[in-house]
Image (cartoon, rainbow, N blue to C red; front, side):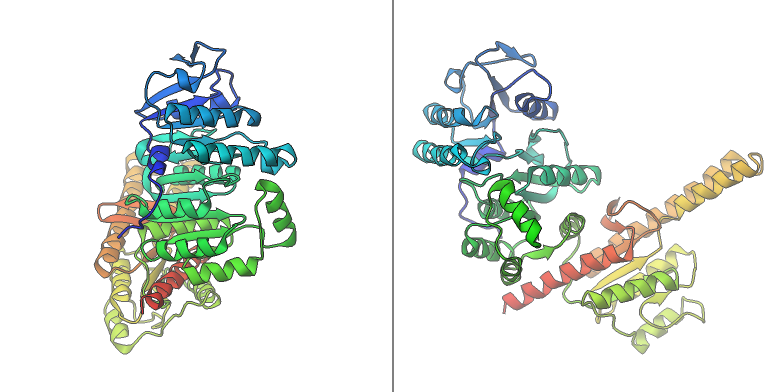
Length: 492
């Protein structure tokens, strides 16, 4: 089921068949050059029209003096020209029949004085001409499935299910860079800027209607109409997760948010209450924003807050248990039926409690047996598996130490064979975890002996969420469990 009622002009904005860049430039580092390069530098298959009255060609493409001089239909106009020229540019859009625009230019409400008047003027001009615009003062938009990236820095993320709405351009760009680097998969990105016309909740409603969008991630500084935002969010969160970070929870942060985009920051407690009531998953850091959003796009939503934990050693299990309790997750004690099942495969001295300590055994089949037993147990709804992958890095370090000791001690072939065997073992483990997750419809989060935060491991049975610390795993499951509870309670 999708969310209905969005403005159809948004399709022309995010999936344009043709784009005009007004203020296009061949001077490196100018906004008109950055935006044009990003659009041309990906695999965008639509028509691109640079607009600059002083140039015949830009980056090898014919340039036009104005929008009205372009001889073909244009779906989207992107403006990088000075703020005072934008009103006339929007009137040209109306004359040309262009229904969508991205206004990258700054110098409006956020600048005060004349900028406030200019912002009112561009809104009036757009409404009179039937033009829908995003911005001004935005770093742009992106649509990965359409290979369209209207941004000041090319990121070219692979297509996926995560959509991002950001009221901060630089933070939004950083989020897209993380998504690309971690290969999470992007659906669409919208930098809303001053939100003169299109608001964050308008974009949320639109993204909620798109089938390729599985999760919506939001960076929020302020919202003008909290009631409307809450109503839209309540509709969207019934069909897909929305994860949000509200910046400006401190007094200093609130003042910075108001000066940044001219947004109304408001009370942090009020925002938190609205998020809770409308089903928005609230996080506190950009790292959690990416981790929880990526996990929500690839994991089943847990039905409750009960967690089963398997650990390679006692320390991590204790830390995970502490984090679970602090985060409101329950760790049920093992019933006799589960203990008997695990007695058959674990050493006689195992701890017989949750977290289950496999006491250093190095056996892929054993790991999957324990994880499967926990996942199939009716009294838990998610599993954390600690320390079962990442040993290949240890093997690499051990081989390096042997080479320093005596490079002739073992043959190169033997060393490579040992490393290959460990890598293949870990691949079998991850594939088995993916299979169990699919079978039980419960999230199984893996914490490995690696660094670098969240990863998504691709297997023949699907993707596995792979993290570097117990607290990251607990944070993800705590947020998703809250959302699962919200869905159950709101459906009553």
